Image (cartoon, rainbow, N blue to C red; front, side):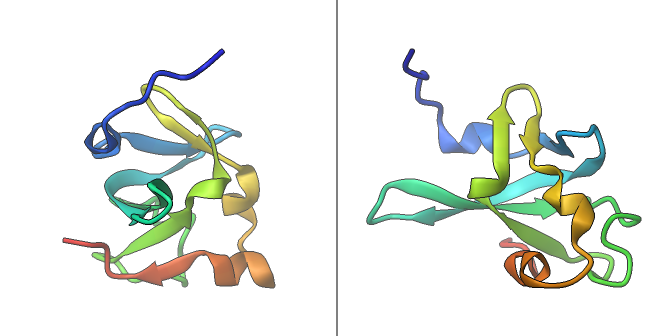
Length: 101
């Protein structure tokens, strides 16, 4: 079954949760690969500061790799890997920084 294409802007404002039901943040913008015509990341703001404590300062955002997305609907579900950002390569994949304005 083919998914119906959606406007990229329809992602903005949606809440993001882990597939365990933990609130992660709200989509503020998307990162695109124009050559591949694909979304490569989600820029999140309004973060769950307990989840990112000690990693991201308040008033900043993060960009999650789009490959972590499990499902897109009224909310966006991402792998529970976001809850395990303790050490190692997973931590390096979550790019902390200022969200696109």
